[in-house]
Image (cartoon, rainbow, N blue to C red; front, side, top):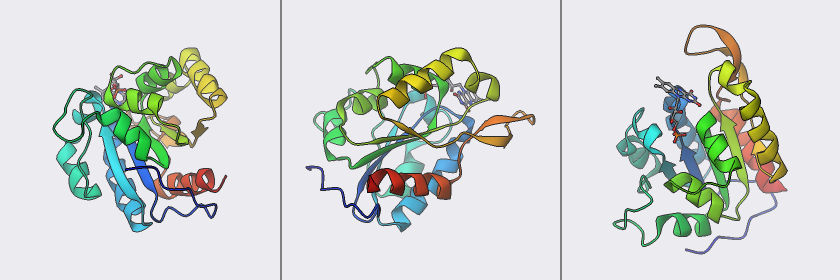
Length: 190
Ligand SMILES: Cc1cc2nc3c(=O)[nH]c(=O)nc-3n(C[C@H](O)[C@H](O)[C@H](O)COP(=O)(O)O)c2cc1C
């Protein structure tokens, strides 16, 4: 499927959205994000790293999105070349939650798994919603990766300040689904 023309309105209706899912404790929140993206009229295709699949099953995201989930770069059962086909059809790619590992991988241009290979291959705009412990977020390497990714033209939403999974407070919480969707509309309206 070829990428549809992006409407200037910033509406998600009819837009093909790739949702990249990585190994974060916040991953369960992306189930609600898929539901809200669908409510906005987007066609959602999920891509999961191996880390993500340790937190929530692909079955959950397949059921919520109504589409097959890409979990493996080498799997030919769903698509001939999954990363290229997903990259081609996307109007927008959202990575939520984005792990520290994912930020490092994308900033280095690595393409060793289904998500990083697809991001490397797409020309769709990229929106990143990081989620991690604040010590990981504030690490100079993570901050340098964020600066580099912004330099590539990627947009960031969050992380937000608040209670983390450890019970402590800090910058690292995944932005809420409404905030991510508002940011997605803004990216699409550009
Ligand atoms: C219980 C648990 C929770 C984790 N939560 C996070 C997280 O919120 N953010 C993060 O960047 N890494 C987190 N990690 C570490 C990542 O899962 C790990 O770096 C993994 O390699 C990420 O792989 P991926 O980026 O390919 O999905 C967590 C690990 C464990 C065991």
